[in-house]
Image 1 (cartoon, rainbow over the protein chains, first blue to last red):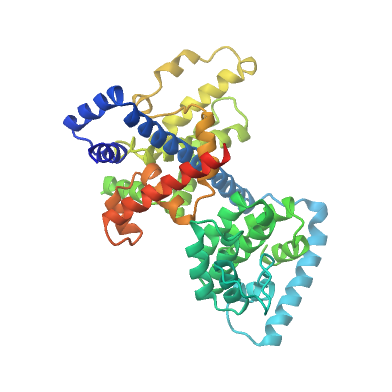
Image 2 (tube, helix red, strand yellow):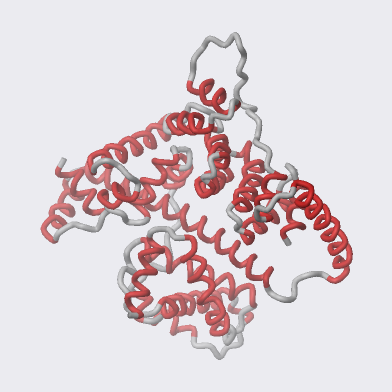
Length: 244
Length: 188
């Protein structure tokens, strides 16, 4: 217990001089202590490295935003095509708004017209299913639109890693529950960790930013999407035109 | 007054505020690029160096090496940036006409000498840890990141993440570490 406490104080930078002395002593005399210390230091370095890479990526994103808002940006030859496309989509969007006589902000409409909940492609729920499992419960709740419950089960399964792609579906439920910031964080994580749902997660990440009315990030993510993924690419292109 | 403002900013950075991160980046970018232009590097190299300087600055805020305000944020960024610029120039050596005194790299600002600029590459174990760290649940990743990266104490984690008491946080942390250990064992 004392040793654990010393390690904890070390990493919290709260060792007193006296404790520091004891700590250094143990590092030399107690191999188990040294081993645990090395393990925790390794974790620290691993996390630090990961955060550093993430940060650099984010800065590259900031830079993209900045260069986009700089005055010289469009290639001339494309200008006319773009403006025609933009007017068409603008007209379409206006028509849509008028048609629905909605008075909400534009972002909402864009979100609503583009958002379609991602179907459950992970778990087949059949009526004769008698086996109760977390996975079944979660997707049953998800399919029936009980997002509160679905989120709860996905969350509870998370540490055990028992539901495949649970983060992706949890992020979907967050979107449905208007927890946009949570959805954004989680989609980002899925992009990093779940190869199978990378493209899908990126598309929904753009929609989440849209819902947050965060135009800058929505645009950055959409551009990244068009460059890198086939999934919903034409939708992404269209949406980008409307935002630009 | 200004000091208080900077300390406030540092604290917000430590807490992971995306807005402050962006604001500080944008506020110092123009000044830095102007300053960097005097050294014959390309614009892309300068932007890249600014970003690297920013990453190093941020990392030192997280590790507690920059804890209190002793200079303005831009002084830190310029100091680190200068070091990186010289480093880059040394790498481009052939392109640089001989009249730069590259020996002054070793005497980089006193300020910068208290910081950690270069980090060793990850060892094989650390790479493995990183890989399996990302398979942990969201709560675990958050908890461990707060403790080992953002330098939160157990008490601060308890308050920030709405845990009932410190023991719960400690127990959760032990569980996360155990899971991580097990995942690695299973896969070696």
